[in-house]
Length: 235
Image (cartoon, rainbow, N blue to C red; front, side, top):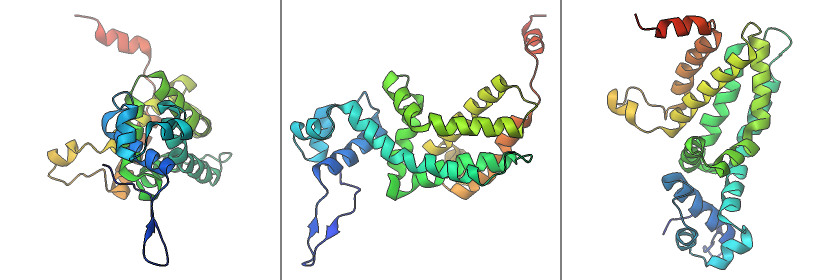
């Protein structure tokens, strides 16, 4: 059975109060969803891992989808709030720094997202997995958690890069998300290739490399579609 990640409260006699059934359900399912994906985990597997009965899940959450939604909302809210706080410190009316905007977006995801107080690696893996799953449930949960704050960053990027068409900025934002999610997933591939020299788990190192990489991509001159098509023509 999975151990709960929630802190147990010690009593005066040295004993501990176990996490509530609701908390055990959230902790167990977060681990399971992160490891196996939302679709692959059954309700019965969740209740067995949490050490509760089926009625407890229905009482506290109503459904597996609502359980996932509440986990994600609780974990994602601090990230979105910190992003907006960092963005508010940037003067968007005075040639805002692209690098500062990128850092304001990325740092909370890589730092708060991996903090054990906010789910730690389980939530990081869950978020990366949801981002690559095509199910409507995943898309709806991600949208509810991040669409509002991400819209603010798209606006900020447009202020920093007025010469880049909006549609092009949106594509580049998409590519940034892909880079961020793969970095967060920390699959271990690059550590194997570099004998550990490159380690996405070292957040400050990751930020020091990812920000200039993405900034160069955002600043690059858009290539005309006609030019791209001409390259594809067989000779």
